Structure formats: structure tokens, C-alpha cells
Length: 373
Image (cartoon, rainbow, N blue to C red; front, top):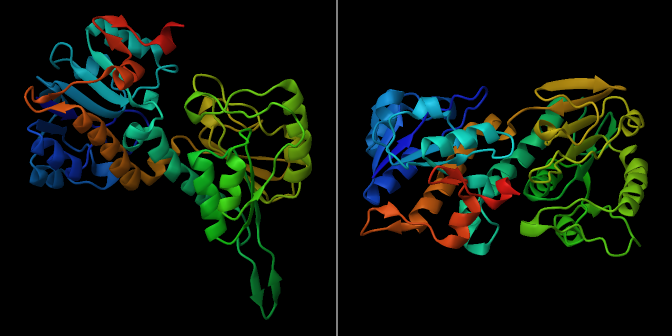
């Protein structure tokens, strides 16, 4: 069983899909691990560290030659992995909805593509969940990015020259990223409030010491979809939420938006009129900018100014903390493959629950229900 670890080719991608720690663990299972030379440099991992862990180092062609499993952060192009064994597994974040043509190419080539972002949110798969591990650090980094762009301090300060007021931070969307953003903003000394369409998150917000901002007296709205994700709300709820947010957002210094709906454009949370109501010098960080954005006027890969408010739209935020996010991502991959490792076969064998959830292609066809509907 040969596992190939590739150097990422996507622009701006600094992460790597395996670390010396996980390489050593894969070898402990009986696998052979080949790492493309330079794969870990942007994540502060030297080739010598992989070699010391027992991996072989080579160019891309030699790395993928005869590989049974290819590990990546983002999905590799089919042409770049020519030479892998027939039926090889491609295990990575494959962006199935955004990169459908590449998924079709995997099927045509006879590869079995396993999309780690389709991992079901069940108890036994928590340690395999790349969305949670990467979102956690994205929420942290979003607050640091906001602090960097904000022209004032976060905490209240009592000085001989007078008092500096604490920044007001509002987190919109309280999933993994949002919860970490709340915790980080609180640690920096901001006055934090947060909102979400899912009623169950109110207790989580308050447990972190933030103020929960929720629509009241709109019957039957819970906002909880399958797997813990939010769903789209009714028109009644949207109107009530817009009114509540508009009155609250005008008083904020920092706003961080994190709302995503799998397979669909990100919901619009902040309009141009709401931006105009904010104080000049305020900062908005849109973590959903690559999926259309939660904020009107946000631009992927740029920091723009509208009505005196900075709107931060960094691409691939997890890659901005590549060393830590690579460590977590690589552990997710190892936890996944090792959980299904068959010692007699010397290879992983998936069960139906998780296998059917994450498998995109098999036997030359696209087989995942989420892509066939």
C-alpha cells in the first residue's frame, strides 16, 4: 500500500496533507509513504523532517507512480497524477459542487474520489472532520485580521490620559468558526455579541460570555438543517432578522460573518445600506466571500472600503495559518484512514455509512447522491 502526499498546486494554498507525525503513523500501519519534494515548505515542514519520519522524497511523477492512495488538501488535477494505480483513492477536500468537472474527470479515469468535506457530522467521525478543524482556526484568524485592520484597540484601557473604550464585535453565524471568533474577540477584550438562525446556539453564545442577539416571537423557526448546518429561513424570519440586525450593526466596530449553506451560495447577511449605517473606521470580515459572500460589496482576495468601512475578503483563510491547519488537516486524514484500516489486507476498507457519504466516484461513474440530485 503506497500513499502519495502531493505538493499543493492551487494558487495561494500553503497547507500540506501530511506531516512527519502522520507519516510516521501511516508507516506504523504498514504503508509506504512517498512525499513530493518541497510539499511541506510553505507549512514550515522541511523535506529532511519527512525523510527522518521514514518517507521517501521524489519529484511528482515518482511520488504518484504506483500509488494506491493520494492525499491532498485540495483535489489534484487528473493529468498531474498520471501513474497512480487503477482505482486509486483520491482523498482530499475536493470541492465537489465548485469543481464538478474535475470530479467527472476522476470518474472517467477510474479513480475513487473521497471528499473529506462530505464527512458526516456524527460522533465517531468528529476526529475526521476537516471542515470543523479548519473553520476553528479560520474563526480565530478572522478576529486577528479584523484587529489588524481596525485603527483602535480592542480592550478597554484606563490610562492617565483618559479611558479607551472597548471595541464592540458582532459575530454573525455561530458554527465552529463563529464560536472561535467569539472566544478570541473576548480574549482580546472586546464587547462581543452574536447571532445565528439556529435557536440552539443561543446557549452556546451565552456560555462564552457574549450577548445573544436573536429574533423573538417568530414561531416555528429553528434553522437547524441536516448535519448541524443552517437552512434557509422563511420570508417572515428574514424580515424580522434584517430589522434586528440593522439596529444592532450600526453600533458595532467589528463584524465577522461566517454563514454558509453547503452546495449553495452564501446567504446575504449585510446590505450596502447597513454598511453605510456603521461608523467610519469599522471593519467587516467576510469568511464566506469565496462562496459569494455574506456582505454586499465584499471582494474575494481583497480589502475594500465602502462608506468608510473596511470589508476584508481574504481567500483561503485556513492557509493563512498553514502550520497549524496542516497539522490538524493531516490528523483528520490519518484518523479517517486508520479507523478503517484492515490489518490483513494492509489497506483501509470503508463501511457504508461513511463510505457512501464521502465517496464521489467509483467504477468509472459519479455515485454520490448529493451530486446526482
